[in-house]
Image (cartoon, rainbow, N blue to C red; front, side, top):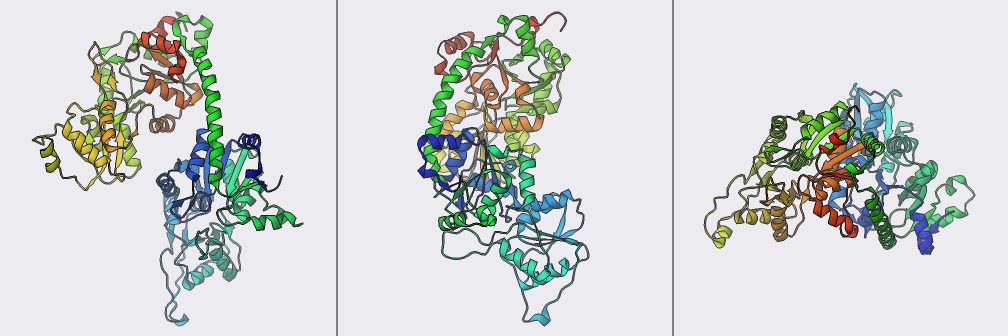
Length: 628
């Protein structure tokens, strides 16, 4: 198959195309965006690929940014991407030197993206920034640094004759490594101006040094090896998307990937038609399997596929939920043994599972001990944000449970480390309690708003007296027993600014109660602030993605061998479903037997049912034989 226009395919053939790959590798510039402008529907296409279960990785020859900076750009342009999903040539160059145990200095023709990646792996460097030519050659002074053992050439808007001289002089020593980030001759641009790319600089240094650079980026072997090693892709089930035939498409051809050329960047259809007619293998290798005008043209087809898949999944889910929602006490001895042997790690909610406020739930401490005796790892995962991890550890131990600090995740801690990971340097307006305040303090993050708001007067007085603090860069909402109208005004005012981070610890609308009193949770406070701020907050606690990522990264659990225990369908059990854990609902907290029975009768009314359920955690002890 050669250069098939996707628009010429029937609906059935388009679906077959989408089903032919599990992994998507995509170039960025010219495919997803032009500089800081996303191309039409490109973000929606890439995000939909992920929603359909495709693995998505961003593989760019751009050396001007670090992986972290690329992740920030993706987020800004609404692409769902993390640092781990990104492979850029600045990172590849640093990784290459690290892998050969390089311990000298690098002369860099390039930008801070390269130098920051070098610094991350502990490699010294020099050369970045302007190095202008004087009046004539007689003023050119070159002092070679004897510690330089490598030259890296990337994109450099300060490229100059003195830099050429220095690079070539270092490279006269053949023991000095010569690395080029990529060979892209020009940048894709929507204007008629030609923007020289890194390949132009690399070619120039190769010519004056009379040496060939080792190229890190597409389509050369190093990046191909990194893709296979890092992402463990099946070439036959992988799609490479790009706008440049001699890098993106050629890489796909060499690796045995399916290839899709988008005509929104460098390569034009006329060139493809010419290569198709050529008898030279070098030209034939540049011919893509498929092409399309822009990536966004895939969006309506993906939406149709998503709708069909959702309908099929809903039918399957209903049947599966009815089949797997099993009462623990109804299991046979063999079924219970199989259940017990199906997991190595236990993630447990606390309130409503292990205790209710100040009262231990009977039999729960003994059950946790039994888990540990059976060799299971046990972790405490709570949406409680009124305490710090240290305070929760004290409470756990006071209730006769055994725990270590590193076995505890609470939403106050999650809110603080979320901001730390963003390298947040401003001030937080806090709707919450001392638990969040102390966790923010532990990360060195300044905050205001803790405790009662003493602003006096009626609503008009509040409006005129409140002067927003320009240093506030985030709003964090948790459980706050001093919640008030004044706090709603201030939190919503800050959160209305899209440049201010809006974070909530957890969406629980109520807290487990030891009696019939209803205790509103953080989710109630959040709903009021979201409504007036006209924004949705990022939730760091269960069941949202951030806590899932922290759990997998921090504990290294195998989802297929992990049990999630909780009393709340909408947080604990939903988190387990999203992470692929086995789930056990205990009805000693939020969810009642009557509510579960109602959902089981009408499974279409709720997408959330556990794999197993029990009256309380100690039912596990009662199901155990006398000697395990």
